[in-house]
Image (cartoon, rainbow, N blue to C red):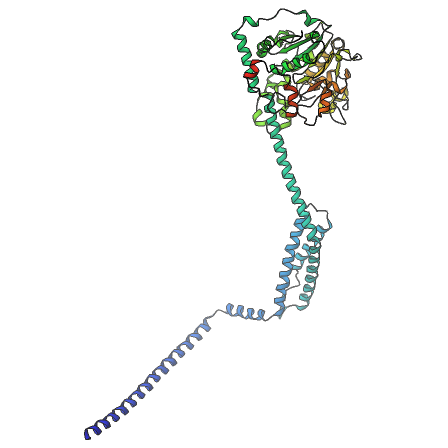
Length: 552
């Protein structure tokens, strides 16, 4: 017991001592923390006072001004009004720009918008707005506010009224721009198509070249077989029906001759005078030797070179063809200029100055013993007996032809340059044009009227191409002006080489149909609806036609 009691008392005493030691420790800790905190606060206060003394005066002044402005309600409203004026000025200028774009320079709306833009600019730069001693002058501000609100109201009303109209006009303008762009593309496509068509028309198809080569080969292989025939007096007999055909196209000439013979009532009275160039002379002779004409018809084949009077000292066209200036016009830079002017490139086709093309103006000298002759182009087909043409009274005229004018089309004014004084003085622009390709010529009247001399006179004047472009129709219109007898249109129907609208009824009634234009019936670009009218006269039994794959 004594041990236990003693141990318990010692435990109580030890606990009290521990308790008082703990309180002393806490008191010391709090005292230390207080002193540390007080020291930090004291140092911070001293540092802040040092910063305040070192701040620049300008900073203090700007801060004071900013606080003063923040507290000024008029300044806030002024900024808002200024922003409204600026925004509406931009909008008004935008609509004015639309009006100019739409070409409304003389419109009332454009003037109003421009005046309104000037008013907004004047309001923004008004000198009465300034800061007074106590801020913005209130009277000036209220006056500005009223003016800006009035202008804003006016601008909004104008914009509401114009918006729908301007939107519609912008759509119209966009549509016009689109149409213009499409038209430009269409014109470009037409020019390219015209150039391609002209190239096709001027090119010699492979089948034609093949035919000519095989005919010449036949002549070389059998020279004895194709000796020239003796002179036939029928070629100078004026009582017969004589035809003149000038061409270097063997198959085309054969179709013309064959169509005449097959539709003639008395074919033994028909004589054909075919003239070609030296290159195709042999082929032409071999064809008609291998395929002689039926039913007694006759054919005479010559080359241009056999007519000795045709030289550069006599024929202006030959002299012009030899000139360096004309050769430069025809043969230089054609590829470069091909796509620039599809209309004028056709006049650069050398056929317009070929001798064969101009032989028609020398008929009386080529056939001095004949009285009348029917001239036929190589792109025609004869569908009926045409001997009635020799019976037509030409009333002393030289040329019998079908007129082509209708309305204002195909008149002299379209073929000749009436700005030239000589043309203007000598001819009438409204005179009706006629067609070359099927013409009955009275050679006696031709000699009497000295038409070849007239042709030479005008051809010499046109060396610089100032009277007409080129070709044979313009000089023909001039040479036979007032010397042409108009024939019934059923004698000669034109347009099968370019016009798909020629009616079949008109074609059936025609004595002669003409494939004038680029779409010749022997080319791949021929119009299918008319091609069969030509192909039925092709001699398909001729072996070389089959071998050369004409695709007829």
